[in-house]
Amino acid sequence: MSYIVVLFENQSGGMPDAEDAAQYAKETGSSYPVTADVDQAIFDAMPTFPSIPMKCVLSPRMRILECYSEHDDELGMAAIADHAGGS
Image (spheres, helix red, strand yellow):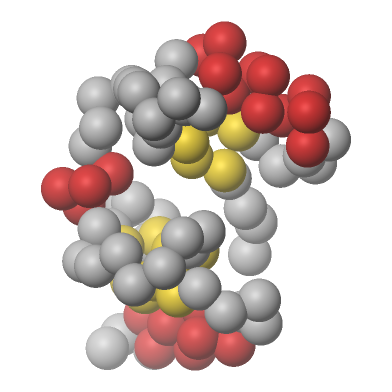
């Protein structure tokens, strides 16, 4: 499993851009790729927003399999295993 950080808003609550993503990566020292959701498409794709920040597991075809806010990736790993098993 690997990670990517997707910003859905900038520091003032507006739409993020590539500069916001670069600044976020620099300020946080993120070792993961950081991108900005400039089309705000993530809201349409997300099943729910129980809490932020959130992690979502994607299939190889970029379908959301599971979203969760726990630090432990147990739910994500179970979703991956279920998907790999054909369910």
